[in-house]
Image (tube, rainbow, N blue to C red; front, side):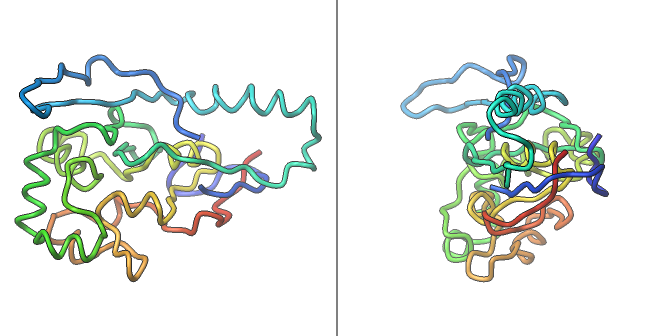
Length: 219
Protein backbone atom coordinates (compact mmCIF):
# COMPACT_ATOMS: atom_id res chain seq x y z
CA UNK A 1 0.00 0.00 0.00
CA UNK A 2 1.01 3.60 -0.57
CA UNK A 3 2.28 5.51 2.43
CA UNK A 4 2.92 9.19 3.11
CA UNK A 5 6.53 8.66 4.07
CA UNK A 6 7.81 7.09 0.87
CA UNK A 7 7.14 5.83 -2.62
CA UNK A 8 6.13 2.25 -3.25
CA UNK A 9 7.03 -0.02 -6.15
CA UNK A 10 7.95 0.61 -9.78
CA UNK A 11 5.72 3.09 -11.57
CA UNK A 12 4.97 4.72 -14.91
CA UNK A 13 4.63 8.49 -15.31
CA UNK A 14 1.70 10.26 -13.64
CA UNK A 15 1.07 13.98 -13.56
CA UNK A 16 -0.95 15.91 -11.05
CA UNK A 17 -3.82 17.72 -11.80
CA UNK A 18 -10.71 12.45 -11.40
CA UNK A 19 -12.77 13.00 -8.48
CA UNK A 20 -12.62 10.42 -5.69
CA UNK A 21 -15.28 7.77 -6.30
CA UNK A 22 -17.45 7.66 -3.24
CA UNK A 23 -20.96 7.35 -1.94
CA UNK A 24 -22.68 9.81 0.33
CA UNK A 25 -22.07 9.08 3.97
CA UNK A 26 -25.52 9.24 5.67
CA UNK A 27 -24.12 9.57 9.17
CA UNK A 28 -22.29 12.73 8.16
CA UNK A 29 -25.25 14.52 6.63
CA UNK A 30 -27.88 16.44 8.56
CA UNK A 31 -31.09 18.04 7.26
CA UNK A 32 -30.75 21.57 5.97
CA UNK A 33 -32.51 24.05 8.21
CA UNK A 34 -34.09 26.60 5.87
CA UNK A 35 -34.72 30.07 7.24
CA UNK A 36 -33.82 32.27 4.32
CA UNK A 37 -30.35 30.90 3.69
CA UNK A 38 -29.46 27.44 5.09
CA UNK A 39 -28.57 27.75 8.78
CA UNK A 40 -26.90 24.34 9.03
CA UNK A 41 -25.69 22.13 6.25
CA UNK A 42 -23.50 19.07 6.53
CA UNK A 43 -22.34 17.58 3.24
CA UNK A 44 -19.65 15.00 2.68
CA UNK A 45 -18.52 11.93 0.79
CA UNK A 46 -17.27 8.68 2.26
CA UNK A 47 -14.12 7.10 0.87
CA UNK A 48 -12.83 3.58 1.30
CA UNK A 49 -9.32 2.31 0.64
CA UNK A 50 -10.30 0.59 -2.61
CA UNK A 51 -12.43 3.42 -4.00
CA UNK A 52 -10.04 4.90 -6.53
CA UNK A 53 -8.69 1.49 -7.53
CA UNK A 54 -12.23 0.32 -8.30
CA UNK A 55 -12.72 3.34 -10.53
CA UNK A 56 -9.42 3.22 -12.38
CA UNK A 57 -9.17 -0.53 -12.86
CA UNK A 58 -11.98 -0.80 -15.47
CA UNK A 59 -10.69 2.35 -17.21
CA UNK A 60 -7.20 0.92 -17.52
CA UNK A 61 -8.49 -2.53 -18.49
CA UNK A 62 -10.63 -0.99 -21.21
CA UNK A 63 -7.73 1.12 -22.40
CA UNK A 64 -5.59 -2.01 -22.48
CA UNK A 65 -7.73 -3.45 -25.25
CA UNK A 66 -7.04 -0.45 -27.45
CA UNK A 67 -3.51 0.65 -26.55
CA UNK A 68 -0.34 -0.95 -25.30
CA UNK A 69 1.33 0.20 -22.04
CA UNK A 70 4.19 1.87 -23.86
CA UNK A 71 1.69 4.11 -25.67
CA UNK A 72 0.48 5.64 -22.39
CA UNK A 73 2.54 8.75 -21.72
CA UNK A 74 0.76 10.18 -18.69
CA UNK A 75 -2.13 9.79 -16.26
CA UNK A 76 -3.77 13.10 -15.34
CA UNK A 77 -6.37 14.16 -12.76
CA UNK A 78 -9.13 16.74 -12.66
CA UNK A 79 -10.80 17.96 -9.47
CA UNK A 80 -14.17 18.52 -7.82
CA UNK A 81 -13.67 21.85 -6.05
CA UNK A 82 -12.39 22.41 -2.54
CA UNK A 83 -12.96 20.26 0.53
CA UNK A 84 -11.14 18.64 3.41
CA UNK A 85 -10.19 14.98 3.57
CA UNK A 86 -7.89 14.22 6.50
CA UNK A 87 -5.76 11.06 6.33
CA UNK A 88 -3.48 9.30 8.79
CA UNK A 89 0.21 8.41 8.40
CA UNK A 90 -0.70 5.55 6.03
CA UNK A 91 -2.92 7.78 3.93
CA UNK A 92 -6.12 6.19 5.23
CA UNK A 93 -9.09 8.61 5.51
CA UNK A 94 -10.02 9.31 9.12
CA UNK A 95 -13.52 10.60 8.35
CA UNK A 96 -15.71 11.39 5.34
CA UNK A 97 -14.47 14.29 3.26
CA UNK A 98 -16.20 17.59 4.04
CA UNK A 99 -17.05 19.05 0.63
CA UNK A 100 -17.33 22.65 -0.57
CA UNK A 101 -21.12 22.79 -0.09
CA UNK A 102 -20.81 22.12 3.64
CA UNK A 103 -21.41 25.22 5.78
CA UNK A 104 -20.90 23.79 9.25
CA UNK A 105 -17.72 25.81 9.79
CA UNK A 106 -19.42 29.21 9.97
CA UNK A 107 -18.08 29.92 13.47
CA UNK A 108 -14.59 28.92 12.39
CA UNK A 109 -14.80 31.23 9.37
CA UNK A 110 -15.71 34.06 11.73
CA UNK A 111 -12.67 33.15 13.83
CA UNK A 112 -10.44 33.36 10.76
CA UNK A 113 -11.83 36.78 9.93
CA UNK A 114 -11.29 38.06 13.46
CA UNK A 115 -7.87 36.48 13.85
CA UNK A 116 -6.38 37.37 10.47
CA UNK A 117 -8.47 40.29 9.26
CA UNK A 118 -10.96 40.25 6.40
CA UNK A 119 -8.97 42.57 4.16
CA UNK A 120 -5.66 40.81 4.85
CA UNK A 121 -7.11 37.37 4.10
CA UNK A 122 -8.50 38.65 0.80
CA UNK A 123 -5.21 40.33 -0.11
CA UNK A 124 -3.19 37.22 0.74
CA UNK A 125 -5.42 34.44 -0.60
CA UNK A 126 -7.62 36.15 -3.18
CA UNK A 127 -10.79 34.87 -1.49
CA UNK A 128 -13.23 36.30 1.01
CA UNK A 129 -13.44 34.40 4.28
CA UNK A 130 -15.95 31.55 3.94
CA UNK A 131 -16.85 28.23 5.62
CA UNK A 132 -16.63 26.67 2.16
CA UNK A 133 -12.84 26.75 2.15
CA UNK A 134 -10.53 24.13 3.63
CA UNK A 135 -9.09 26.33 6.38
CA UNK A 136 -12.42 26.73 8.18
CA UNK A 137 -13.25 23.05 7.72
CA UNK A 138 -9.92 22.04 9.27
CA UNK A 139 -10.59 24.26 12.27
CA UNK A 140 -14.04 22.69 12.64
CA UNK A 141 -12.48 19.21 12.74
CA UNK A 142 -9.86 20.42 15.20
CA UNK A 143 -12.53 21.80 17.55
CA UNK A 144 -15.23 19.15 17.15
CA UNK A 145 -13.28 15.97 16.43
CA UNK A 146 -9.97 16.56 18.23
CA UNK A 147 -9.05 12.86 18.44
CA UNK A 148 -9.27 12.56 14.67
CA UNK A 149 -7.43 15.84 14.15
CA UNK A 150 -4.53 14.67 16.32
CA UNK A 151 -4.18 11.59 14.11
CA UNK A 152 -4.30 13.58 10.87
CA UNK A 153 -1.07 13.80 8.90
CA UNK A 154 -2.35 15.41 5.69
CA UNK A 155 -5.44 17.21 4.43
CA UNK A 156 -6.14 16.46 0.78
CA UNK A 157 -8.56 17.44 -1.97
CA UNK A 158 -10.53 14.74 -3.81
CA UNK A 159 -8.28 14.45 -6.84
CA UNK A 160 -5.19 14.69 -4.64
CA UNK A 161 -6.33 11.63 -2.70
CA UNK A 162 -6.87 9.73 -5.95
CA UNK A 163 -3.38 10.75 -7.11
CA UNK A 164 -1.96 9.67 -3.75
CA UNK A 165 -3.51 6.21 -4.07
CA UNK A 166 -1.78 5.77 -7.42
CA UNK A 167 1.57 7.37 -6.62
CA UNK A 168 2.09 7.47 -2.85
CA UNK A 169 2.73 11.22 -3.15
CA UNK A 170 0.68 13.77 -1.19
CA UNK A 171 0.57 16.80 -3.49
CA UNK A 172 -1.76 19.45 -4.84
CA UNK A 173 -1.71 22.09 -7.57
CA UNK A 174 -1.82 25.84 -7.10
CA UNK A 175 -5.41 26.05 -8.35
CA UNK A 176 -6.85 23.73 -5.69
CA UNK A 177 -4.43 25.11 -3.10
CA UNK A 178 -5.87 28.58 -3.68
CA UNK A 179 -9.26 27.28 -2.49
CA UNK A 180 -7.91 26.14 0.86
CA UNK A 181 -7.70 29.81 1.93
CA UNK A 182 -4.20 28.99 3.15
CA UNK A 183 -2.19 29.82 0.02
CA UNK A 184 -0.12 32.96 -0.41
CA UNK A 185 -1.12 33.67 -4.02
CA UNK A 186 1.61 36.17 -4.81
CA UNK A 187 4.48 34.00 -3.57
CA UNK A 188 2.91 30.65 -4.48
CA UNK A 189 3.58 29.10 -1.11
CA UNK A 190 1.60 28.17 2.00
CA UNK A 191 0.83 31.23 4.09
CA UNK A 192 3.03 30.62 7.11
CA UNK A 193 1.94 33.59 9.19
CA UNK A 194 -1.72 32.78 8.66
CA UNK A 195 -1.17 29.14 9.57
CA UNK A 196 0.55 30.23 12.77
CA UNK A 197 -2.27 32.58 13.71
CA UNK A 198 -4.83 29.82 13.17
CA UNK A 199 -2.86 27.18 15.05
CA UNK A 200 -2.49 24.93 12.00
CA UNK A 201 0.70 23.09 11.08
CA UNK A 202 2.61 23.29 7.80
CA UNK A 203 3.00 19.51 7.98
CA UNK A 204 -0.72 19.00 7.34
CA UNK A 205 -0.48 20.53 3.89
CA UNK A 206 0.63 18.65 0.76
CA UNK A 207 3.43 19.57 -1.61
CA UNK A 208 2.65 22.41 -4.01
CA UNK A 209 3.13 21.95 -7.76
CA UNK A 210 2.07 23.44 -11.07
CA UNK A 211 -0.77 21.48 -12.68
CA UNK A 212 1.43 19.84 -15.33
CA UNK A 213 4.15 18.71 -12.89
CA UNK A 214 5.04 15.01 -12.80
CA UNK A 215 4.50 14.09 -9.14
CA UNK A 216 5.12 10.33 -9.20
CA UNK A 217 4.74 7.03 -10.93
CA UNK A 218 2.14 4.26 -11.16
CA UNK A 219 2.49 0.60 -12.08
